[in-house]
Structure formats: structure tokens, C-alpha cells
Amino acid sequence: MPAQAPPRRPEETAREVAKLALDDSVEITLLMALMQGQNTGGVNEGLNEAGAGAAAKVARNALTARLVMLIARAYARPKYGDLHLHVAACALKDGTARQIFMNTNGAEKLTAFETQWSKCRGDHRLPAIKDFRDNALPVGVSSPLSGKIHHGFMALSGGYRTWAC
Image (cartoon, rainbow, N blue to C red; front, side):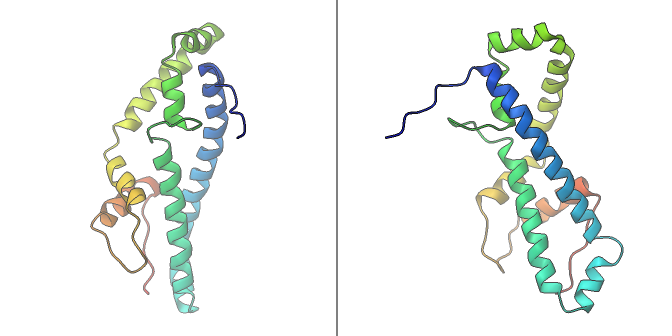
């Protein structure tokens, strides 16, 4: 049985999560830009006219699924070994970790993070996103949650249109 790595100190965990969260935020931004791009400039219509509507729908669903997974995991209850945003929020509750970040001129950043985290945790779309992630349905089966998810992404991405296929 392989030996487990020694547990990270809370401040190390918070720093590692910050690095990974930056990667996630870049990917989320790119996914949203792709989704916005597909919904403007006649992309959908062109794909449908070229007979590629079904393939485009698969690509859109993959983009949506990836976006849901990136967003949902940031709010998941932390488990041993996880390195997502919720883990950092928990790590920053540790007195030693807080003190380290407060002593390195990070008081304003820590306060801003906690304010933004609280705002994000209160987002009304989170339950629908979590349900969508936890209850993925086979292709062709509609879900009463899908309208809530799509409405949420419309707000996130500036809206999108579906393919006519």
C-alpha cells in the first residue's frame, strides 16, 4: 500500500488552490467565449445548413458539461485530497493560515476573497447546477432542470441560441 503524503498545512493548501483556481477561471472564461461565439455571427445557422447540426449539438453539450463540472466542483463539500475553491475557503478559517496571509499585506485580498466567496455561495443558480451535475440524464431524455441551467448560462454567457436539429 503506498504511503500517503503528509497533510498540507492550511496556508500551503490555500496557495495551491489559488494556482489551480486561476487555471479554472481561464478555462471557464474561454468556454464562455466559445459558447458566446457559437451563438453569434450565424455560426449555428451555418452549421445547420452544412448538415453538421447534430455534431454541433454534441460539441455544445460537451462545452456545457465541462462548464458545469468546473463551476460545481468549486462548491463541493471538501474531501481529503481535494484542491478546489471551497477547500481554500475552509483552509483560510485556520488561525495560523489567516495570520500568515494577514501578515503578508494580504488583509485586503483576504477580505475581498471572503466577500466574493460569500456572494458566490449565495448564487441562486447553484442548486440547479449541482442537480444537473449529479443527475446527468442519457441523451434524448429531457430534464425539468435543464431550463434552469440554460437560463443560468444565458445570464453567464450573454445568452445563446440552440441548433434547429
